[in-house]
Length: 271
Image (cartoon, rainbow, N blue to C red; front, top):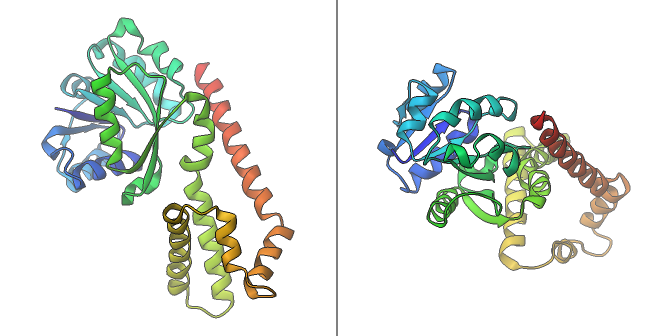
């Protein structure tokens, strides 16, 4: 088989869904293993993929293996995988696990090739952003294949590893910030009398449309903001309130905290 997943969480499902929806691979070329059999059953029912009976079985049968377990469990998974890793390509999506940390376990002696990646949850709807680490041990053909794999989820960028903490803060964790913003906008709309279901839909569409304008016009976000702000109008009043209450500072500080936590995870995982 071509592709295997160790871990059957949301991100594994997102990647699997993109791969199948875009026709990149058939379900017959995909397998999964998770210590929770209920998770595996759910994936099998949803995607008609094969469930491996053990991690060893999955590694032996699959050429590329996505490491989709939580960072705290990854060391144990890698250590168990190492005896069967010869000739296999491992794609890690674990936050905090650097390339050097991955290859400390799956080193040259194991015969494995390793790529660090960082996708995000909008991959679930084909609108993801995935960073691929420049510092990797995949051969050129395998790296090209991995890049096409993640393109089924949305945008892909190949970046140096020293930017990965920033990537995690900017794309990996940021959907949570945006969901909070949409929820807050909807609460504000409800306070003004809008039905809640409509408020969520209207707020989400406004965020979607604004993001699309940034991507498609090429204009600076500040210029697009100025287009909406009429003199003495309603929008500039709202913008002034956001500035006065520290909106920008809150976002910047949240991203700094996220990046700091990412660096701490790297230190913890080394121990």
